[in-house]
Amino acid sequence: MQFVQLLSERAAQWSDWLYKPRPMVLPIDKLETLVARAHELDRLLCEPGATEDMGRYRKLMKERSDLEGLVTAFARYQSASKQLAEDKAALADPELREMAQEEIPTLEAELDELERSMTLLLLPPEPLDEKNTILEIRGGEGGDEATLFAQDLFRMYSRFAEGRRWKVEVLSLSESSVGGIKEVVALVTGEHVYSTMRFEGGVHRVQRVPATETQGRVHTSTATVAVLPEAEDVDVVVEAKDIVESVAASGGPGGQGVNTTNSAVQLQHKPTGIIVKCQDERSQHKNRAKAMKVLKSKLFELERSKQQSAIASERRSMVGAGERSEKIRTYNFPQNRVTDHRIGLTLYKLDRVIDGAIDELIVPLRTHYQAERLKSELGIEMDLGVRRSDD
Image (cartoon, rainbow, N blue to C red; front, side, top):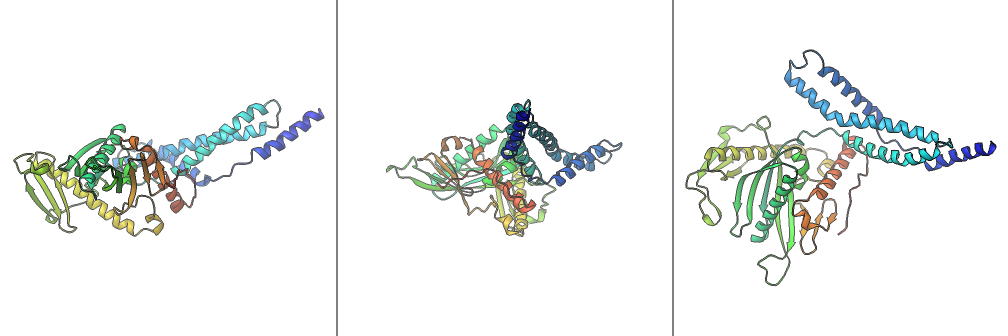
């Protein structure tokens, strides 16, 4: 009997050493407050007459929807925490010890993941995340090779969008004489387009042997990518007096006529000097509507950039500041290598990336951005596991 008691005491000491209390990094009070708010919203949404004011009702529904993931995760976190405490207590029981020892690592791993996800869910949603996106790609330095690279990038993003069931609508396209793209402007619509694509803006560099190179030398060319949240009528008001409109016949590469009617539309915004041209459609009316959509998005982004420039320096230093002068990524074809210079991430699978498999680039960028937000907005420093490389 004394031997059994001694064994139990030793087991309890051993378990205290092996299974030390997990450090609590979650702001439990804040989580409980948000869960209480979710319950309050449930009550408000079920009140008689809740739908009389549809604007208020939709706002409450959106707030409740934003909290759902956190409420579900916190409920599971509380359940797993309780089970972990019971398993640790069971280590002192010879009959339950073996089962408890098997469950504890699994529960601790689950709690780690729940802490991670809930910490990210504490970040307030950003208003632009749900917007559709205006995607602009232009050939940069490198002549014809740059336009071919711009074409490769547009194909890469189109394939990526196809995999996510997004819709890509070309608003304006200017091709080069070698079949590349001088400039393309497209509207990308679907779920979470802007939040996914927002860090693709900047200068993309390619290193490869052009098809016209007879000596086998590697050339370097660039293309610029701009990712703009689509502006809605409530976001930007454009006065008719501020617009100068001109029309012309649409033309293809090398002067080839697309059609003989004056369907191409160019809009110039006099206060900012921004010029937008659209000639993709045969209808002047449709081209005007598309050009206005792009112009509004450019004006919206311009105003947003002005606001961001006044934000604290740590916010401006985050990934994806969107400066076009930044060389954000290099695509090295001879080495099958793609490197994102902002987070030092290198992948030796360029063949897959250029075919649209860019999740392994986008996810680490978003993760890094979330880590920076946690630090600057909530004062939480958290290692979210962004892989880096010195290549």
